[in-house]
Length: 401
Image (cartoon, rainbow, N blue to C red):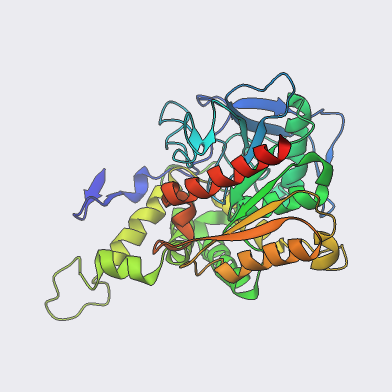
């Protein structure tokens, strides 16, 4: 059953919402490829936990050159996945999240570059995460799944690179949480990256960013249907959809700018105002509710908890005596891209990345997208961002020549 509030925002009846939107074994694989890490060698996490039977889902586009020197790693953001490029099809309920940037003839041209995107550890679209079967009993990991960090994610991506025979990436690129992975690649594996392109991200999570994400986690934990993370056996409609939807509503307010919301919705109301009722809604409320339900259909509440925690833990200087010693490990040129209207990861944080890299003696520069769309501009402003990326890649090829 679907209800329609008008203006094209259609909401599913709660009973129709899945317990989890995770991809699970037995679902159509789509374009995914899978790498299983050796089961006899548990994957040791930065926080001290161990994972056995880790499976990594990834996708590739283009052809790897005989010299294996044209590989590009694209790192996805919080609710992204390995499907950076492609259409909606069985196994992929949404189109590629970076279709305007990755593809034939695009800025990251798959006729020139061999592009790889890996679903992150702890995610819910094919790589081992809370919804995945535990190797001991086949039931979902659920609350047993340990905390992961950005560094853990990068180490799994390195395993995929090894599997593909890629010793050095020509470029590692990504926005938001993906940008955090880009920076960790430069610090953890300085000899395995030729260039770094972090977009709309930070060298370390700020107090405000931690506050935003922790509010979303609290919303999920307060949903009685979350059941401490043990909800996978529940019937459709009886999962933590309210908590996850509210978490998404909170984050959506940080992904876009006030100008965009005002221009699109203003003070329009959904229900006619005849007297006042506490639950009469403005159009922006209805839009956020729709976006919350939409995420429930393709994501997992436990993964949302884990990945936002990983973002809060992000700090390049942790265990490295601070940011400057961490940046001193870099060897690859850096193009740091900020967004003029970004309130979640404001442009001064992207400028700081370029400044710290330059201080460390690495060629680095800053570029800024002039956009009203806020943090999501790196997914929306494909023409503007594409021009920046094309110029950066051209400069790398000139240097290589």
